[in-house]
Image 1 (cartoon, rainbow, N blue to C red):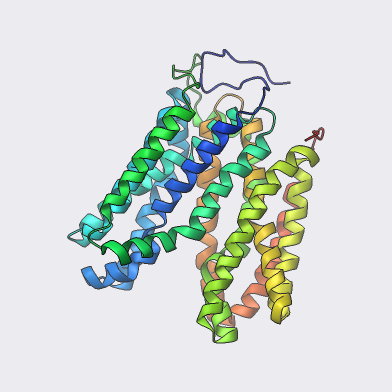
Image 2 (image 1 turned 90 degrees about the vertical axis):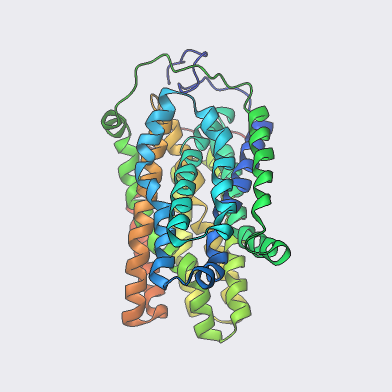
Length: 399
């Protein structure tokens, strides 16, 4: 049983209470709008390359610079634990939208790098404390809350590129910047949705990051193993799926459709996984996901026709469904410093994804994508033993 903290603080744990579903949905919508803006770079990159005469190396560096602030996520979380996560959450959508809406009018490559750096800092400022707010609004249904939250992000990745291309088609590369106004409306929505959250400083002394790690390592170390094992499959699908399909079918339309199918299936997966984990237990849901993802990925590679696409749907559903369950685990066990714990989780997740994508690409160059997919699907099974190092599911809840 966790101790009940002073209810005048924002960052201490609260006793179980009814779910603030309206607030959870509002934050999830904010997540969607925020991540639509942060997805503008990739679809507009060909136009930016042409405008600024960038090399491919320079173009790739833009994405790297945008992701670099993820390395300071634990310190952002520690700061959020000492002040108030509410204002981080409210301001971040606008702070991300402004630089991302200005990329079309950037006069030089150097200015584009600066815009990406500011956007990356804002992305971290939003994603580190937002799950903490959702967890507090979710009462004892944290898995369900994390599912709603993650649906916002997954849906944004599915539609964000289409939004960017559509805006540029209507308004031009250097004329779509007024779209940043939508983010101001989003920030106002989040201001209203979180108005019942206290904004005073926490009554407890700041918790050092080293103590947060010691308190959370029984959760974070097994999760690291799961993230790395899952990361190889994730890298195969999110970075190389269109290329894999195009090489096997010669059909670029199918290649693009395949990634959309995968992402939409992921939206469904994150929606139900967290909620089901509230009822059946976190370890049980992670076990099912880490069994289903490699098996369905192998089926996708080996089978043809509509069966292959059925396996693709199952791969997206199971592979992407692990995140809300892990977020719920982190928040349930982060008693003293939930934002810092989430920052550690997000930094580990970033490092795992970044490292394995390079390995996946190198392996594909050496032995071909089909063999690469098979190898890393089998590597996915390595995540299973780490699940059993997590705390046992103590009970299931009636939903």
